[in-house]
Amino acid sequence: MRYKIAICDDMEEDANYIAAAVHTWAEKENILVNTDTFPSGESFLFQYGEQKDYDILLLDIEMNDINGVELAKIIRNQNDTVQIIFITGFSDFITEGYEVSALHYLMKPVMEEKLFQVLNRAVKKIQKAERSVVFSANGETRRTAVSEIICVEAFAHSCMVTTAGYSFEVKWSISAIEKMLSEAAEGEFIRCHRSYLVGIRFIKSISKTDITLDTQTKIPLSRKHYKEVNKAFIRYFKGESQWDS
Image (cartoon, rainbow, N blue to C red; front, top):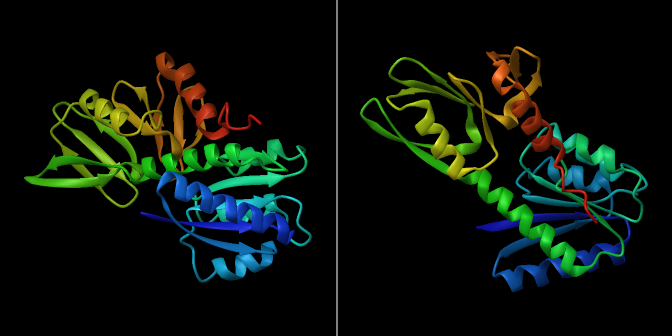
């Protein structure tokens, strides 16, 4: 796979340095990349209007027109899978980074070794999002992207798998599906009830008795699983260790 990476920084020297470092990393890791540099948030948005296929964004926060955080919020409203990495000379925006599920926060001057580590993490997350699992349903073998599975509901002798685009029934136990999804995407799914398994990325809110999904669907949350689900939800969307320097 070739990764498309955008670097947005109004300091040309900094942008060129980051671009060169990205290509050094790509050569070292034997990874194919295309990089585009942008001198402002506005110039990036103009390009993004035509090409929304970027995999990784390296955004300077202190830009004159649209700062990096504002730009990231605009992008997140349209794309929840692109990996966002902030680059800045200040540490005042850490909490705002949580709002856009940023992968990391790098301080200037950026050290190549630290940048390489973060880029490796970004690639791993992208690859995880691309993983698929195979179900046997209605006499067919169906390949399903893990990132599209919203929830699984267990019945007496089968389970209903609901994805972003469709639902289908499989003659599997919910425990078997839970094990398969855990192996394919560890930390992406959580058991919230003896009859329900949910994709954490699709959780909108949690109460003491139920979970509301992005689709506005409510599914039950048992008292037994409440603490574990709440902890997993916070960990997933805030990233407990992603802001280390």
